[in-house]
Figure 1: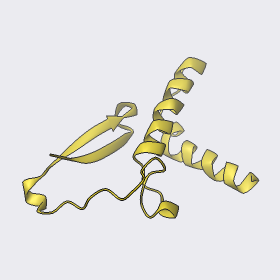
Figure 2: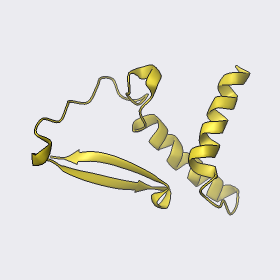
Figure 3: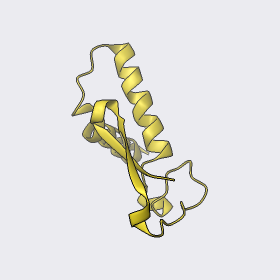
Figure 4: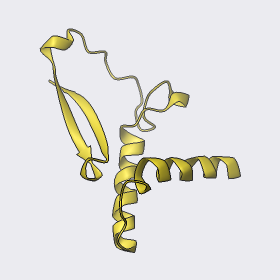
Length: 87
């Protein structure tokens, strides 16, 4: 279990805490809650066949990419970007 904990802590540190200046405990809670939401709802995971943990199945493949617009959502002030196709 120690290796799993170290892996998660290292991921949080590299992807978030190295880029955000945390001001106090309340701010740390907000930053970690935003990252937790991103990690569980959007970020792809290799062990789940590039699906987020909350996804039940693969998202449908985008056919005809020229017809779709790509939307960017900034998380944590732009530290993390999420991309989705607009319908």
